[in-house]
Amino acid sequence: MKNSKLLACLQLMRPANIVTAFADIMTGFVIGLVSLAGASGVWKISDFANPSLFWLLAATFGLYGGGVVFNDYFDAELDKKERPERPIPSGRTTKGEAAFLGFSLLVIAHISALQVNQISFFLALGITFMALFYDKYAKHRTFLGPVAMGLCRGGNLLLGVSAFPEAIGANWFLVLIPLLYIGAITLISQGEVHGGKKSNLYIGLMLYILVILIILALGFFKQAGNYFSLTFLALFAYLIIPPLLSALNKNEARLIGRAVKAGVLALIALNASLAATYGGWLPALIILLLLPVSLALAKIFAVT
Image (cartoon, rainbow, N blue to C red; front, side, top):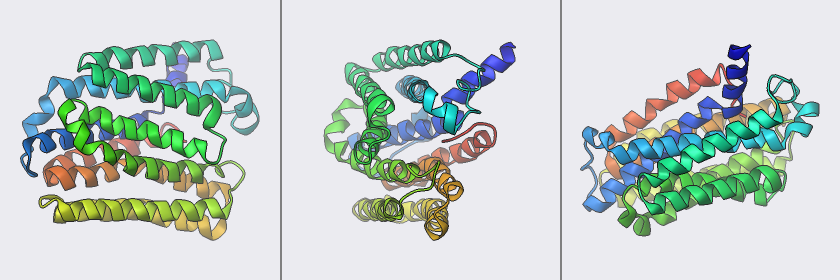
C-alpha cells in the first residue's frame, strides 16, 4: 500500500519534467556567472559546486513538483473523463493528499530559494503565483495558457541567474526564449486529447523556428558560443521539428501528444544550447547529460 501511494505521488510530480527544470537552473547559473566575469569561456567545472546552485535546484524541484501536482488537483474532475488512469481519478490518492503534497513542495521551494537571497525568494513567489494561475484559470485559454506557462519557465531560468543578482539586469531579456518556446508547446498541447487545430500547430512551428533563430543570433554575438552552440542547437531542432511535422501531417491526438512530450524533454537540449552560447561546450555537455536521465524517467512516468 505504501509503495502504491509513493508511486502515485511520484506520478503526480512528473519526475522527467523536473529534470528539465534542473537544466533551466544550471543554464541560468552559467549565464549569470559568465556575465559577471565579463567574458565567455571562463566557466570551470568546479563552479557547479557552488552552494547557491544546490539551493536553487532544490527550489525548482519544489516549484515544478508542486506546480504539476496542483495541475492534477484542479483537473481532477476533467481527468475522470479524459484521463481516468491518473492518480487522483483512479483513486490511488485523494485530492486532499495531493493538495498536501503540492503545498509541502512549494514550502520547500521557498525555504530553499530564501537560502540564496531575497531576489531568488521573490522570483520563486512569482513562479508559484503564475503556476497556480495557469493550473486554475489559464490552462484552457488559447492565449493566457501559453503566456502563463512560458512565464513560469522564463522565471525558472532567471531563478538560476539569481545566484548572481547583479547579472539579472543584463540578462532579463532571456525570459523571451522560454516564453516563446513553452508558449508553443502549451499551444500545441491544447489538441493533445481530442486532436488540435492545425493553426495552433503551425503557430507552434513558427515559434520553434523563431527560438532557434534567436539562439543563433545570440551565438553570433558571443564569441565562445558562436560555434559551440550550433551542435547543441542542431540536436535541439532534431528533437522537436520531426515530431511536430508528423502531427501536422495527420493531426491526430496521439501524434500531438508525442510532439508535446518531445518538446518538453527537448528543453534540456535548448538549455544546453544557451549554456554553450555563454559558457562554451563543457557546461553545455554537463547539462545535456540530464537528457538521458529525463528520457529514462519518461519511460516510467508520464510527461504530459
